[in-house]
Image 1 (cartoon, rainbow, N blue to C red):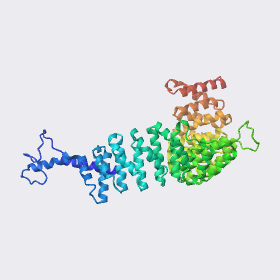
Image 2 (image 1 turned 90 degrees about the vertical axis):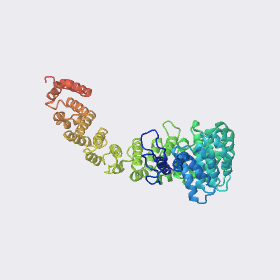
Image 3 (image 1 turned 120 degrees about the vertical axis):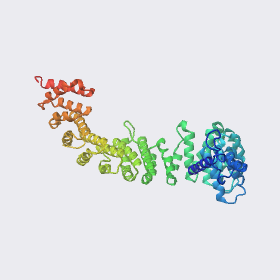
Image 4 (image 1 turned 135 degrees about the vertical axis):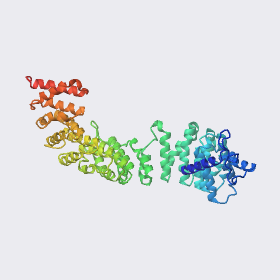
Length: 567
């Protein structure tokens, strides 16, 4: 339709430019007049007749809508099927352009009597488009639509019902109720699922009449429909109708019935069913484990949305049936934390597989889920740390997420590999990537997750980065990381102290400069020239604009005064 709209607009502009009457008030020569250009078909020097002038303006007076009306009047006698479709496409294209073609309503109503589904669908689209703005015209087509709701072709019945419900006029309720009831018992699934969505439109149109019709009970009964697409629509409609009370009501029978049939649903239907599980609270442990067993096959699907929804369902069940402190249960009953760890162990393999095979957008979302799961159950993803190595074709936001996750996966066994990988990323052309890599190395040392000797090893790497004068943001970030490490591990002062006096000369970023000044105060006892280095900074105190630098200078000066009072 969009392409047809552009084609019609181009044709309209070309025709308008060719036939628009010239401006009689201007000084430009008039075609066919004295000194003007003769009309098309008139040889130079010949005068144009009155007949030529009349035909010149005929097209302009007729207009687009009148042209379409003339085409539609020959519609019934036209035998070429493709020609009929082209006429309808032209009407829809003009309607899409914003040209008011509501004057063609009568002609379009006559065209609805056809066996061609394509034409019938376009006529229905026309009717629904003008129903709200022209309610008097919409009532003209009611009988035709109600009649088509009883057509022998299920596609026609479904299209007619959808169009009838899409008119969205309060006065149409009395015409809509009966076809809706019949559609819910139709022998074809397409008609039934269209009827279910029609119920939702009726609910938004008139809630009082909807309540009187008792459609809620009918929708609950239709959850046992043999067609899964009908059941999916019933779930969506019930959730929206009962949104004020938290969604459709659930019980054991409904929940188990839907989960036993989950393999019949489409991907969209599976997600609709899985969204119900976190709202259902199992009666006991056995029922919770039964639901988990029914959902387990979903983890083997390639649909990342279904896998993530299943993880959410598993965690909600674990939270509901797990033993909490103070519960009067058997000692063998698993606790909430134990169940959650078992869930994360089970879903680790599907998540890692999806991470390696998804698009960049999907990978980013899954990385965020993995990040939360690592916080929830630390240590489970540690052996998969190589999956989170940065690849050259990864986009920036994915690289940043992977580097942050790598710091959380470090343990005494894999910390050397992870730190080496982060060290390679420090000099990356992406400035933010370099900063995050330095922060991740510092995080490993801060949490003591790298094992014995890891803190000192990382501190030495950060000290080397202080001398990277050509990459100012790295030296600044390294200084900030070393300041945090010294606070956490005072034993590394001897490793950090040596390069600080010269680092102060080259680091330009305020955060890095403030960190170096802080370190000079902390390591003042072991750095001979510390007071004299700070003295130069104090002399230029008035030119310091950053408050953090001034605060660090004040703290470092006071510390040095107590360390070495004579100097």
